[in-house]
Image (cartoon, rainbow, N blue to C red; front, side):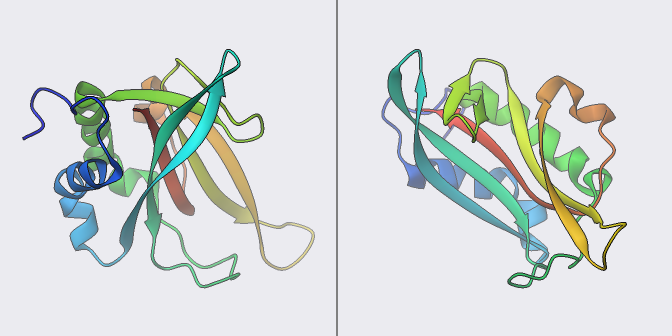
Length: 151
């Protein structure tokens, strides 16, 4: 169905179906869930709609920093090919939350946690990683990994 790319003006349901089919191995494990939603972002003073595709761990409890996340090494052999297939049918873009802008470089956004050395608990961190660098990434305790595509 998706061999030639998404049709112009594709919707959230089409994106979600594609992701569910291409991340089925990870989603069949109850450790992960998928969220697809749309956001408005700007580029060169013009607004565009993007879709955020978020893979997150289900082991997180509300407000419970320190709940176990997942390790990049455990999913990279499934997630990197997913990104390749996604990029073949759509356009992956970089997104900056602080500025609410998107850019032409291709990246993913990762939210992970590290132990707090001063106090008991964990500290959340936000990291943007270029897709070209994902193969060499070493990161654990990931809560969410998101990629953005342009409609």
